[in-house]
Image (cartoon, rainbow over all chains, first blue to last red):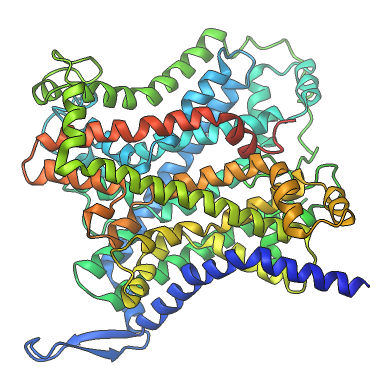
Length: 297
Length: 327
């Protein structure tokens, strides 16, 4: 009886799951497998290149080549620096704004939240374009105020990292404010009342009671931001059009694109892609474990 | 490994005892532990109010300005001609109101290709998101409501999918597509948008929190097939969640610029962001300053419907994003 029920449910589950699983196979597993296969070979043009390219087995050669390529390593250093600046600044500001909204002193809370969410509706590429213009002397009212008017490329050249951070900040801060604010609203009012009765002022309540209580939400947001950071591509790709400081392999994703289409080295591009995917997966796994352990008493 | 992951993400069935076990968005609120340090025992004289009403609202106003000034600049720039674009303050209107002219140029450029880009984007992002949300809802519902062998192992596969960033899949997808001749075609960009592992994870949570098991049991007792009870009972109950998943994937596809850039060479297949990118690079590198106005007006026309859409379905994303956070 029970088994027949399970079997029936199993059939239904197969029906419900197959669209996702089949597409997942086609879009994720097979490409990864094909990339893994390609990454084992290298193309060598023979002689003067007249005989066409010859495919040779390279073993892990492409992985070694990518991992020891200082340009590829620099990409990860860029990402590291980006994450080190972006995550604390963006998450910190989002938390501060959410706490201010929740302080009981803010007017027009709903309007503010909705407004802050608008950049999230703007596609990343268009956001980057707008900011590229806002960084360009002559086009931008902002750079003139900042005294960055000299030079043709503007802020994107003089401060490439900060100009990319600012775009991310503009796009994602409001999104996190909405999440943090909702988490703050869920804190039982008695906890806050008790603290107030004991003489804590608003600042103390915000920093010592509310902020620690929503720490898991903040940690998760930071995790997603880090994973997003590894994928950095759109903003530097746009800014590179005008900025001399952003090279064609500034981030790992730019490196893979460069390897595939400028150097026509598909083996290397495949190996680099798999390294990025692996590092990203490992990192998110590690962070999840870490947050898991911390949230369990 | 999978097991830890699952615990970390507090998948619904494991969450156990609390009254609303699964209502947790991953970036949502904590499982509420009441271990917060109690209020400080210090009962000294009340500190002077550290936050004033004026101060708080002033800071918030500054943040709101930071948010709205870039779109305001875009709006102003779209109304200018090329002279005013470089000659007048960015946040002020130009000397000539040139918006109708700019719009005319935008829709006439390259034989009206901009409209085609918009249409492509609607197909890639809109069509892809609707289908993806439906596929995720079915899968998440199955993981939540059905008992079958190998369930948790399969779910582990989904979680691994969540951890692989989509950008890292672009090159592998391109390499595969070029091998089977799907490069520079609609499907090469459309199909990857249908797969959204994080959406399956969310759908499982939404199914657990919005669709009571008893309701599903009742439809079974009434003799409804599983597909029917999903379609006419469970799906409507999960609607805010499904809309959220759809919106997430909609923005993800719309934002994805790496994939179409690598995959497409025929500009008639471009989504709007790739088209704007080429106009912008023409303006910068090939000395076609007129293309600035195309890229700027094109950006404005592309984002206005998006902002309107987000404001219109606010009710849904707000409740979906923050599911469980607000009582």
